[in-house]
Length: 436
Image 1 (cartoon, one colour):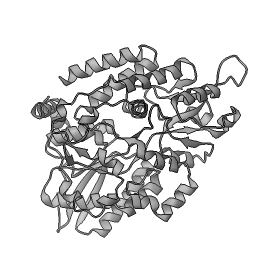
Image 2 (cartoon, helix red, strand yellow; image 1 turned 90 degrees about the horizontal axis):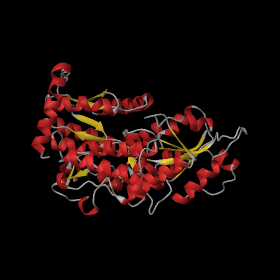
Image 3 (tube, rainbow, N blue to C red; image 1 turned 135 degrees about the vertical axis):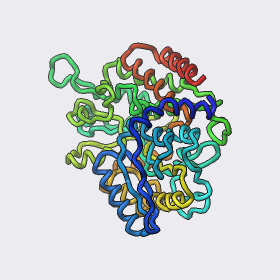
Image 4 (cartoon, rainbow, N blue to C red; image 1 turned 120 degrees about the vertical axis):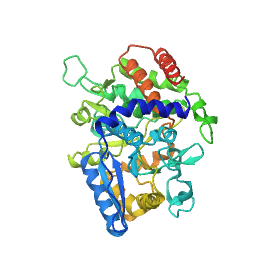
């Protein structure tokens, strides 16, 4: 599908939404102050409070710029509003969202490339180079990393000790053996009531996000390596859902379920910790954003391990990016000043200490206050060490379709409705049909 067709299709789909919902007029620049609107979906609410304090600090130290941060809902609810604002000609100046939206925003000609600012920025050299993959598309930089994290496995040390487990699993075979050893009947009724692991049931992005490390770890690639950088026509890249690494990863998850050593979350609730906190499961896929929740509950019986390797180590890089939307040169220059502030050591350190996210600025990771935090929350080091194996989800215009088909395939094998090979073959056929 070419770019014109993409834009026309989205325009037709959203025009009624624009007419019905309307758009809130932007506040005007007054008395030499450039007013910027920033749309975000930061959660949980305490994290929004941290961000608002940082925005207020920026406004106080930049008297000619005023940033207005607006919460516009979680990502699934944000997207229709974002697309409607673009079609209606009233987008925000800055947008907080996952980098997966990059290709679609480029196709809509809604965002500004950042190369000219990035190339002369003194802060650029301090940003974790592993995050460049989330910024680059079609030989340009389109966003900056706002915050980062990755997926690991939280586990209950007391349950490992009770099961006689002395070594953490480092590969898939050891993960299966460990999950089996943790699965027990503790009340003597002949049925297991403690299980090795929780796997996320559902077709949504959470399931895909936490499964992708296993696909990459199994050697899989959604986009051929030769097409992953420097490409000029990404619409022609063949997306390979049905790849050997994906088959191996689905087989691993299905084996864990079939053996009875893993249980499923409630549908689309794979992020909830109830079974982990009660000790029904000993391992759960999640990330450093969980530290704040556990600290608030004064829960201490946990630790973190890297995701065990298949044929290589891998994890999914999470977090959101900031996009500069098309606007006037004056607004874009002001927007870049705020973006540099977000990348700064000051912002990244305060954000990390307040939320548990990992700093994108390498100087922040070495700052004494952050090192003190890591020493008090040593599990954070696992995510810092694992970051070098992090992979970003594809930023293709078709990512939503890729995720949808992967989610359906994962759900079908977790419910034992299909074999991995059959599930992925069907997913590939549906994806090819939708893209063509």
